[in-house]
Image 1 (tube, rainbow, N blue to C red):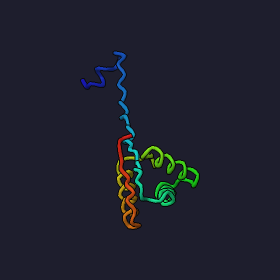
Image 2: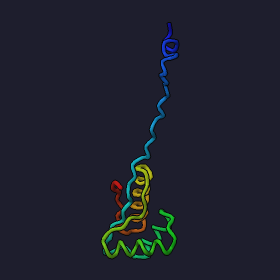
Image 3: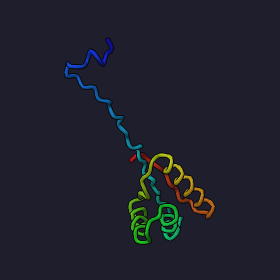
Image 4: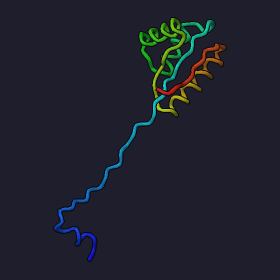
Length: 105
């Protein structure tokens, strides 16, 4: 007798468990304030790499200037790593010491 035949009439219902999908962990891309990078360059970077509007970029730049750091965006790990590398390379290419790092959100 098969397992299915044994279960008939017992009221046993077997339901497949659906896999639980988890969102990937997110990371903040943080820009660190320094005394040498021009504010306008920071605004430009926020618009170019993080697709912020001019108004949003100015607000984030002011937060960076006033508090020493600001969140440019929140992304999955691979995207955050890429953004950090791109921004840091772009800053060096333009001879600015702007530093961007990532930390778990």
